[in-house]
Image (tube, rainbow, N blue to C red; front, side, top):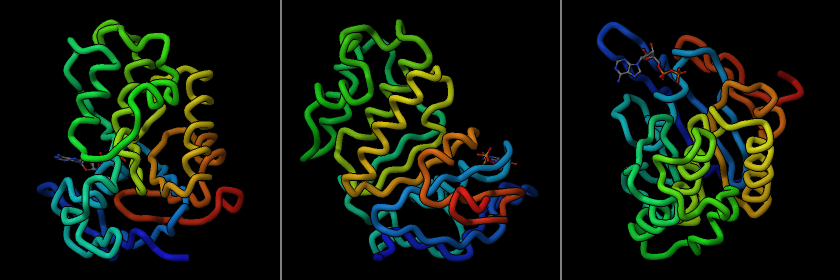
Length: 213
Ligand code: ADP
């Protein structure tokens, strides 16, 4: 297996707060890693450190390079807090984000994948919370990334929508996409992940297959 992501002794503090206290992990090509842990454990900070969207001490290599130097066509990122322009339809939003890349996927296909084909022409502001989150997941898929980071992708999505998203992520993983996601739902981690990383107080206290955890 080839590691597509290697993090060594990653540390991040905010003032007195130690958000990440020396996290090391690696993720192989095609693997699905779920990060779980209580609020404040450091999940979001770790995703940000791994994607180069926050400064951190230690070493992070994505496809063998600094994450900020990696061709952005290769990485998809759904941040936990993501507020796209509200006066655009789901279709327009995905087309907008798709336009930021040279290559990428057909917008209609992504809308179908995230279960938004029927509401594609509704303004974002008029969508339900779960529908909004599905559109947001879609924005992370438009560039057909090799490595996908999803910070709480299914929070606020109803059970049926969640299961549909799980099927979608399964399909992506089966197609070779490497996925790192955070979740509050152990069931989700169990269902999706090849390995689960348990964070507590900024430390990775366990990293194992879901059955073992
Ligand atoms: P999780 O995603 O597991 O809930 P976070 O990574 O968001 O955890 O937060 C880890 C710790 O770092 C928390 O104590 C949080 O308050 C703190 N933290 C995160 N981001 C910031 C920030 N931008 N400024 C100050 N403190 C932060």
